[in-house]
Length: 294
Image (cartoon, rainbow, N blue to C red):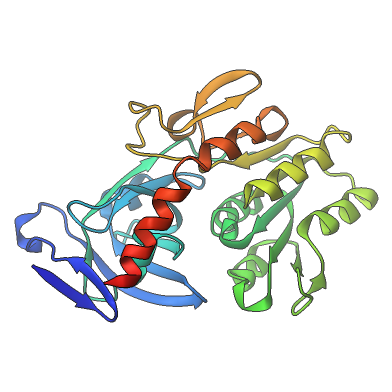
């Protein structure tokens, strides 16, 4: 049986009454073009989640498993907030869901939490939806008495997310857009280079597109600034059993889902990671075309 949400066709899901846990969607709203924020009932995840950890989600009972960042959790209410960018078939399927519906599976929290300590002056850099991962870490770092400088970038003003939330927790926030429609015109790397040139920086945490994280790694390496990146390679089960999320760090094979997702940026083989992440590009393109034809 097929059920329609707008122009998107999905397989109908089993009755929620058949499940011990129902991941009901309490709220769902777009915060940028093709970027949606969900508030979902997930009391077990909310109870144990820490910044830096993620969940594996399935929209339907036969759907693809995808990793999603938890932006924040409310243990009292038993809810977690997720941010989803509609890029491929599965993420666009998720973004077709709305309040009152439900997600089939939410497994987690998975991965190792961010290392939170009083490092000193810490710069967090978020590119695009990578800001969704940066925000909870920035908040935790601020609570640990760090001086937090946040740099947030996007292609254009409409794609900036969580700027106000970061302004509430960071000591300062620098906004950049590629086209200059908000904040400074240019890239996050330009802003980071400027700050490094005039400030003593004890730690950098960069999360966003691979190209951005690789560039930041090269920028901070000569200055010997400890730099952490959060990697999102191809994942399947999120437990390390499938081996799909292999990454090379310092010449050693690691599994992003259990050893990470955060790693020392200066040890990551970004070239190999780009190659691995491109493995299923043609398959994903065909699946997206199928979605558009339904």
